[in-house]
Image (cartoon, rainbow, N blue to C red; front, side):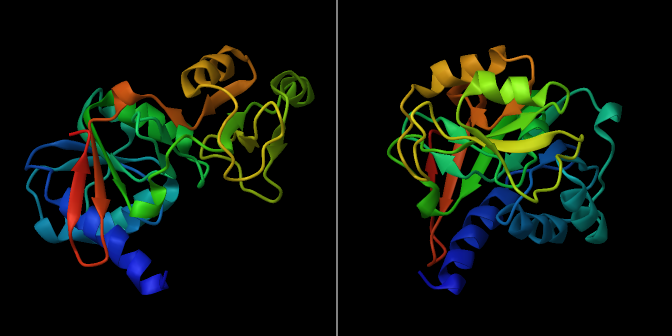
Length: 227
């Protein structure tokens, strides 16, 4: 697919989602290439009283540069809405995030929101959750954590998470390659990863967090799933 067509898909989904927030709302802003199209579309609306929190320094800086009111999350105890991209969207509404390493903050924001809207291009729709699944690891006891988890690989040269965690990927108990269907149910894997003390967080977002998935197409059309 041409780069311009792929960008048009992301733009269509993002601009549709930019029409959802209302004046006076508290809004969580995600991280990534699709959210990059959301920010200018949101700024153009100039919504009175809109207060945002950002899931990464990059999003915060970009939003502030556009005149969007971004506050520290410790000043806000709940969010009306959160909008973010995704790396995978399965038919069962399991979402995989974390290509940019901000998945723990993204999950915190999604969990705090009354409504979590995911914006994607069609290539993010998958028949089943695939490897790898991003994880954020505590540096203390790292070797023991990796040994316990199995096939987990640190991202070589990757920056730490916004909160200082190490970014890695879980590739499956059988050492599956990129794009291979997971050899475990996502719900079981989420429980197993949550059980590990050295895992700060992972990129599996359960269906109960997801309210809408907006898919954008190159011709400007959008489709809303699970809404």
